[in-house]
Length: 355
Image (cartoon, rainbow, N blue to C red):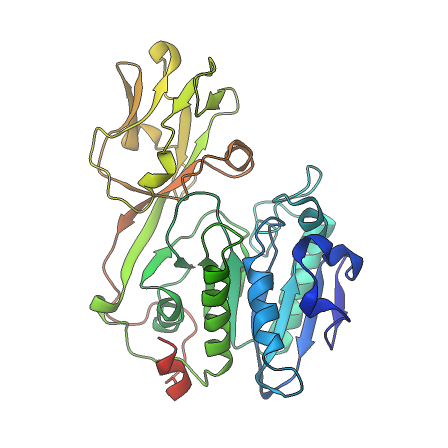
């Protein structure tokens, strides 16, 4: 499935995500040289309707027209077919951010494509990985990491002081690449925001100028660190909506405004028809359903049973069915020393100013 280029395809810098199929046949890996040979790896469009990453990369590269990059840059353009349709993924496709080494499933052409990308970047001695995403709800800009080593946390805080650590779902790109280098996913809010595209581009530009990462821990005052403790999914047998329509679950119409707010126990999330059993599951990192630890149905309402902070709550029904309703998080302290994971010694002036 994968096409590889050692130069930018003609027209790449000026082609929007919905028209990329005119110049790219499918998933594409582009290698560009730079003064420092270990490449920065940037992934965009793993989800076809999340185009901030593509716009950010195009903006950075337009600034280097006619001149060399400070560091080699490898760009993965992911789900071109879904981008053409303006959707997260096509119905016959797997999620392109669930196909990477370590995924629960294997054997499809997309898994082989992901392995090919991973092996290519390992051979090139990848310096750092940035996977750029959008989301559909009302969320701040934040970064996600899969390891709590100093280098990964410094990389994340160059983008935002709000950082989320997670280990599930499996098969995501950043989890695989965290075994090779500092790796971060950027959550850039809803697509179509020039300000968010500019912020992502600024981050990529700063990372191109990094020589190394600090070995010392991130100062506690410089980071708000959270850990994902549950993935909330609506049961397939339950109908739901955000306006009265006779569905089993009637969610609050402004549900996504609860993102990154510490909700007290008893917060109402929805009304439940008939007041039956829990209509949602909450899967923890070990794969156990812990819904009753976090939620309850009381007097016909779905309420939180304990204090919790949600992220990625969305009002888009298709996104909920394809992925999840939200993630539950808890605040954690900053590690005082390196945890397991790649780290490097120091960052140059360019990296420090990128903060």
